[in-house]
Length: 467
Image (cartoon, rainbow, N blue to C red; front, side):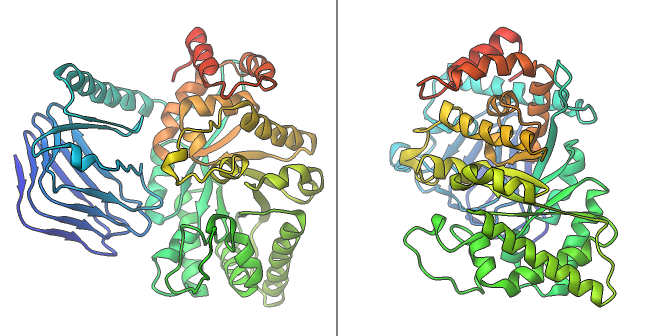
């Protein structure tokens, strides 16, 4: 048994993690406050239960450390005072259950399903047994996925699918190799800025980017330039209060209006990648002119470094994120100018449906597996083929096997996701006939259906696709 009865605080900047592993019960009777940007908290009960009798606050600045409760045999219970707050940005699932504490009593068993977003209060014995088996089954599946780590993601009809991971901190880099991913499809450079007490100087940026490139060990890394604004705020950078920050002065708009910030970051990237290929991706591009201006900043910095005798990267590969719908109708003008493009599915879905992805009342109302959403992404794929430019996708959408199946079906051959999703998505790809799936999806894109999710599930069932 593990009994924690004294307050525990994990301070900002801690690089460790808290792991409580008990053969029987885990009981938390004191407050836990985790304000770290790196640490995670894991509690595992193999033969007993987990009881939380006080407040847990997990308010990491970037949320890279996950909060995990694993009870393989018993219950996970929380007292009426045992609220759980998770305010991270880049970590695992955020779950909010309004009024849940009012529905439970001290010692009430609760099951939280992070995969489906469901919470069961006082579940029946049968449901408890079912979820205990589900946890054991999940562990067996993860072990099976680990055996696929060094196996390429190739469909049954021979289509190679590139599976990359999303990252944002140095501590994420080991996951690149542990997962067997092909590279980093999205490196969120702003997380380094969010951790700092002041705007990182050139030397600090060079050191950080060079460490990322070194630890990638030759695998490609796509650096996204600063995507600040909306829910990502730099405490040392004054930003105006906006009514609709997600569609306001953020990301490339801020960078272009403050060119010194953009040029300093580009200079740091160019110097850090000297002698090696460098991929830079500009976010929130709304029209071709914004990309031209961003690309010009790269050219200015290249000329500056050459004049001062600095070595440059062996190749400079520039791309854009397609996350604002207006850009879809400018691809004929844009794609000839870029080296690659990446669909930013999180914001693209939000803007396509005019639906705030942080609003719980809208969760599930619109489906990215709808004909409209898949059709929009198919247009991007077709234009990329027409202009012979690679296109990838980065976002939560690519990390779920059924959704990833839909993306592969419409022709995407490069997807970026959280590291833990690489194994399940790879297993799906290897059991799939892409050409057969596209023949199935193509007529559905012209249908008036709200979603083709049921149809895709049926296709997977009939054709033995591993989901």
